[in-house]
Image (cartoon, rainbow, N blue to C red; front, side, top):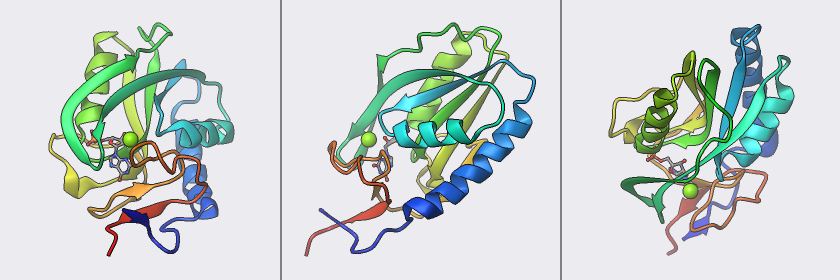
Length: 174
Ligand code: XMP
Ligand code: MG
């Protein structure tokens, strides 16, 4: 597998979308006790950029859910890092890098809902709605993609490429 010769989205194009999402979230979460639950590792950069652009107070927590082996979803979701803050009565925003089959976000949603928050929303930078296997919708979505595997800006293929500032398509080698 190799990277596309040019980025699908450059760092500055990504930041424009992140700004729009931060503005919407800042409006919707004003006056609420909010916890941003960043899904590791993929949403590391997105979460960090998004929260620094927000103009309302928000607590930060992490969750690590693993569901992917290579480029194909296994459907099994493991919680390697559970949230550390009590979510009960709080407004929780789950911050994801990408929604694909929806299985990961769905499992996280179940876990968060079990803690009886005041509300839960999903904010994902990327969304591949055509790949969905469960009925799940992102409440805040930055960029819709076709059925393609992307890497960079936190997203990996077998733990590579997370450090890249731009987002590339992963392509088959000739
Ligand atoms: P599901 O299928 O559960 O997948 O919605 C969500 C998680 O799978 C990973 N994923 C990707 N990672 N490029 C990546 O680098 C992709 O195109 C891609 N699609 C899914 C990702 O970890 C996400 O949280
Ligand atoms: Mg991954």
